[in-house]
Length: 176
Image (cartoon, rainbow, N blue to C red):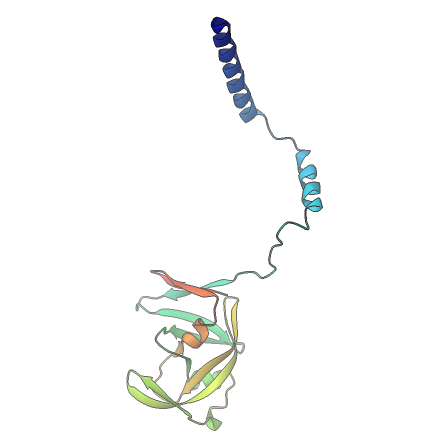
């Protein structure tokens, strides 16, 4: 009985290997897709639905000066920002504030702002929208600096409103 079992097992093993080899050479049937599609339609009520909200990302590039920069559309006007994670708020230069439509002559300097040059007075405002490569944040708190600001700063009042952001050696990647 033992002698008959070994050849049968060997034959069975060879047949199994042959089937595996054959399976890898056979092309899939083209008519299998409709059956899978029908099954998906039948089970559509139990499948998780994809979110219609697309994740948007943008890259704030690191330039030769070692700083990260972004060109944003602020109230539909292009503004070049120095990204400053140490700034609590977005800070607009007087020139950029005027360009985006803020009446800088009627602003009241109602905020004390600490800068590298010391304390200065600034005017608070709210920016309707800042958009960078499709990433959009609305109603962003900001200050308008009368003096001492060469470039507008993209501060944490913008960055904290994002879904997230990551720093790489060449860019800050922001996610909406």
